Length: 229
Image (tube, rainbow, N blue to C red; front, side):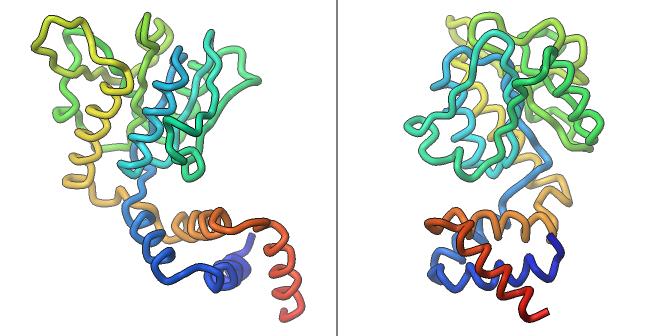
């Protein structure tokens, strides 16, 4: 879609939204990031996976990559509280080696793969360098991350624990980790927000999600645009 048509559609859809709604969307856009992505490797409990996505969305994270080796992921409505509607969830049903494929794809896009692990050499989230975009990998509740993930990881982080319990619930661990990293990113990274083009892309997408039958309206608006050009 060319830039002129995109702006035309944004203006047309905006006519159907209240000023308050548009202001709210602009605030979300200003706080959205693609600098940090989340990878969920074989999470067993769909409630945990959806809770992680909900927490990440609240913190401004847009992209979530779901690796399904043994456990299928189901999009939830209750736990995620509508977060699924506003984020990108990437699944890989055709991949025979999803962990390898996802990691390699993210690395090719410039992301450093950071795995959560009880590894003694792992650093605390607040100590992690954010000199390049990162993809945070959360492993499953029983076995943690896979050996493939360990072999391909660029860095390891772990949360400190000072009690008798062995580990945090994975959704709690994700929330604590992402809050720490997003806070550090906002304070220390210069260009963590969406650029102007991405803002336009998501502005149009989110305007459409606020309406019933948006594709019908878009087809009508496109015809109007074409008649004027």
